[in-house]
Amino acid sequence: MMRTLLLEADGRVTRGGEELITRWHDDAGSRIWIDLQGESQAAERTLLEAFDCHPLAIDDAHRERHPPKIEEFETHTLILYRGISSFDAELNFAPQQIAFFLGERFLISLHPGVALSVDRLLAHEGETLLQRSPEHVALKIMYVSAGYYLDSLLEFENALSDLEDELLEEGSDALMRRVIAYRSRLVKMRRVFRYHVGITQELTAYDYAHLPRDNEDTLHAINDVHERFERLYSLTQMYYDICGDLIDGYISLSSHQLNITMRVLTVITAIFVPLTFIAGLYGMNFAHMPELAYRWGYFVVLGVMLAIGLALLWLFRRRRWL
View 1: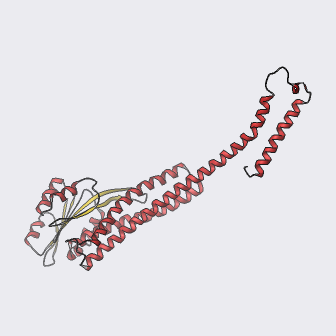
View 2: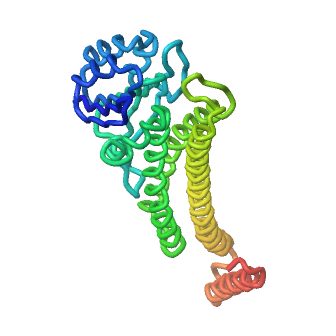
View 3: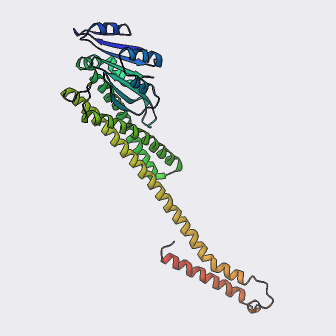
């Protein structure tokens, strides 16, 4: 599906499809935003080559699971951004790559599925942003997309707080598996946000022809995107650390409970070892054992065993081992 937004030199805005590209070529003062959703790679390549996009940039845009990056070419700048197609408060998210080909008078965005941020801007703010410059459209898409991430992360904070209370009240292996699953998802998200922070750091540190830092509005938009990605990265790092603390705390509590159980079992064993020794000693079947002929020997041995058991029990309680 191709969606096109054309801003002509006289300020008129037209929405349509491929037919607007010819009008853009004929009007040197016009600007165009072309969004390609779910198009075949052959069709995308044909269109991009018509806009004189570099073959290496096209190959990068078509490569699956390419890390986010920014790269400048002679006629355009390529930005690979990791957007989202779905995300929830449980950190279940389906990422999708969005490629921006940013030129002086054009912006071409490529993505395989529905992109919420692109749909939102096409419906509302696209015209205003395109009047300012194509780079403002690309930066705003990244900013809005990061906002969807941020909303879900803030919802996850409440879920994490409830999970922390549940672990303290009644920890279980099922809860621990949830925490470990969250931590694994946070690692993946943190890696993505780290790439995005790197992109905006490059934009603020180096001059790109199609994203000029000397333009105050452009620099302000870049800083806004950078701050949002920084916040996302710091939030994922904080939640990752919290999940790690919960795991460590649960393991510590489990180890403490295990130590208490082992201590009780050790004390019981220590009490019964001397009693078992005495019972084993008098259970030997020798013919001449003087104590066997004594009339009160059985009761004496029982008394000695009881005394030893009570003495050891008193000793362990005094040392607070029980």
